[in-house]
Image (cartoon, rainbow, N blue to C red; front, side, top):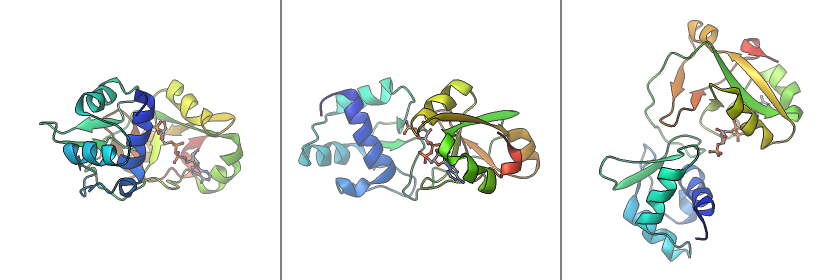
Length: 178
Ligand code: HQG
């Protein structure tokens, strides 16, 4: 594979969305065997060795991937559409969290709140800057402020991924400041 960004995108595809792309086995917690991953990538003409894989994991701007303790397995820290259980512990959120979206979705979000769409969770960030980046991916960005502590008090669960992304199952519109 050409460069680290290209490898990172391919790993996101395989480890979050389509392990079947290279027919690699993924366990119920999202882990994939490192040797198998490297072998199957090479078989499918996506050149990869352990050093390249390690570099992607270490240098990933968002720390998207993690090895297990002995570096025999790897998984994505969040963002899956495949049905895995990363065994997140419910975590009390800070007062406000942010979600970056696009202007074209705002009316629907006003009616239905934030939904998971294809992913396993709604993704939120603790800082505005991250939300702006996320929203910019989909068009003219709009930043939504979520009253997370209030939601939590009302009984909604929040989770914090290993790479600092806040996750929840939905955000009803009444907790969103538009
Ligand atoms: C929107 C990236 C209409 C939602 C990012 C979003 C993130 C609704 C889109 C991570 C809606 C789903 C996730 C509703 C939500 N009606 N639209 N009721 N509820 N939406 O990609 O949060 O770089 O699944 O606002 O940085 O954009 O790949 O979610 O615009 O952390 O590592 O539907 O992906 O990380 O889009 O992004 P996504 P997201 P990576």
